[in-house]
Length: 105
Image 1 (cartoon, rainbow, N blue to C red):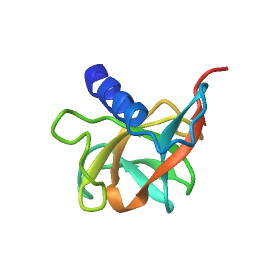
Image 2: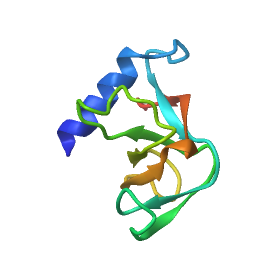
Image 3: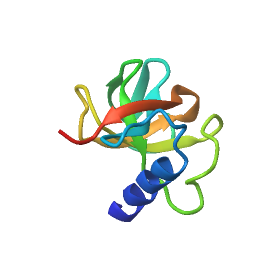
Image 4: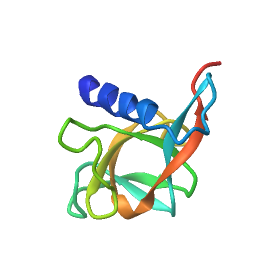
């Protein structure tokens, strides 16, 4: 799982839209209120709601790291808010790119 998180973070860093600074990354954000789920379908339990604007990074493997999000489930790690630190799944239409996220204190 750490391998997937690292791959997604590297993908974000290398495909940056240029808005990030030296102390930030261009992370994904939740485009509209969405459910964070335990697995990639509505049959999986809801973990919590993610409000619009919540910053996440994709946990991806080599097969999905550069695919579009709109028509698939996206495995994410939440970087802020009430679900900070949690991993889960969000339907891709609720995932948007890119929002600068300060990752160094």
